[in-house]
Image (cartoon, rainbow, N blue to C red; front, side, top):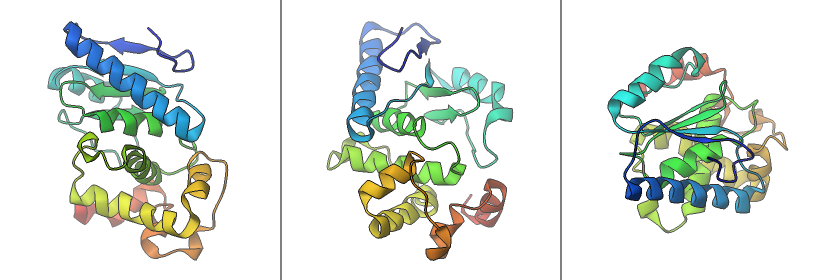
Length: 201
């Protein structure tokens, strides 16, 4: 079935109860509309809905070779984005609204951005779009906040939110050398970034 996702599909791997189905589709529809209203575009990634750790494990194992070197996922992950297959996988039994929004933002980001930069931009704009409704946001670990969110917030403070939005979509460029080291690190090759930051793991 399609929910305005630029002719892409939502695939349910398990039979869900009527209330679960309605919750998932409402989350996707609402998040998709929020992304479109703010960015003026929608993802064209398929969305795969899992239920439970086993289905999530199968999805992760089946696409390990596609995932970025910096992506560390387990069966406890609420969602992942596979850029190669253009698929978003959400484990609906634990995902909050913010997880759906975060992954749909991932699906529109500029393709040349590093994984860590995409992660920071996606979490930053998830916070922007949820605003004061903090109950919509997943609780972020200290390492996610330190590695990804803080540097992007600093970048937003320097560039302004409008320019950062254009940059996020791949419609603008910046010279990262002009910024502090934590921001410059977001532009490193992924292998270098995650080797450098491994003490957070």
